[in-house]
Length: 347
Image (tube, rainbow, N blue to C red; front, top):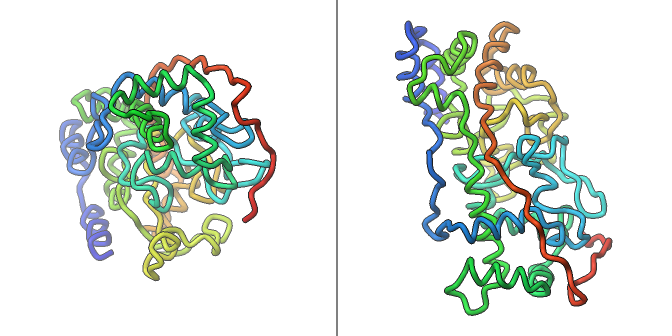
């Protein structure tokens, strides 16, 4: 906490850079460009076979008990990698408790979910499939579903040749992680960090300077401009209950530590311009308003309309190019494929 406040105070005293190269050097003290290659996980080597299998699984609604919801349902790759809803809708048309984060560049986050309860994308992939409010399935039923289709058995055998029994819930998660590791979106800001002076407009450069000068970088730094640390929401002044619902205590539910009440993972800001609504409650639809809420709640200062406009302009430089993805042709179900169910799990 002390380091966060100290950083904010130090950055607020910085002078405006006189040139693009000086601004870039200042930015590189806080940020880094996206990697140019697919990140490799130490315990899950990414291979073409895993990527293709993971892509099929990502799009397959039969991983859900109802046969309606897939990973893609809440992480739409055509609309920013999220679902553009305040909170997601899942099994039995239940409304989920939090806004769906984008899947783009998620492999670079310190952990997954707003509260960081999943250490990586493998763990994250297992959660929604088993959550009663999301896909409401069981590992056993998922494995039975996949085993009922010869094409899936072949794909798993090719992706995990070292496993005698390749079709498993763990391997399903590994394959989805491998596919999601490919979902990197290089943006104009990366081009600027890599040396292109013209990648940002003058207004975006002014917004970047304000972003650093005001202390936004205290929480939103690193390769994803966030996603790499946990901070209390409402550090200086708590926002209203519509933005910070009192019954959602954030990371406290994971750690059972009093200091983690209303602590959340700092939202990664890549593609923030196309992933409204904002905050874990999903109740702010205007990015400019979100910037001003953060100024009051986290920094204790009013961000003027002019300043907010410039910061928003900078944030739009984080909107990246989505990789080309060919939709998979999924295997046809068979007579032994478990039938869909609409039954809602008891709480």
